[in-house]
Length: 117
Image 1 (tube, helix red, strand yellow):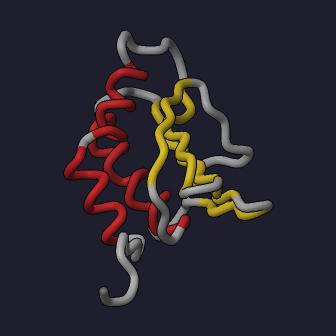
Image 2 (cartoon, rainbow, N blue to C red):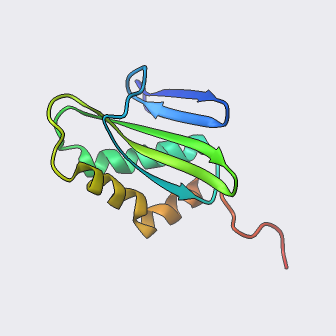
């Protein structure tokens, strides 16, 4: 993890943020099958930053919560100033991109089929 990022853990939840306390001024959510929560949050944060780095005053926040059947992802972040139009749609497009999702799960060590058949 790059310097200056905070990883907060507790009660089946991991949050990666630049500032503490983490704050969601804008956000979108999705569900994933599973994997290492810190790795998932880190990968999602990186892709979110790449997609929104030109948004002035944006600081990404990603929260992973373990739920039955996988993990719940809330991604977005803090904004200084006005909320840009369609920002939540842009965040959701990062979260729902099939290539991103496959890469995140692979990086997080998720294996759909464990063992051999």
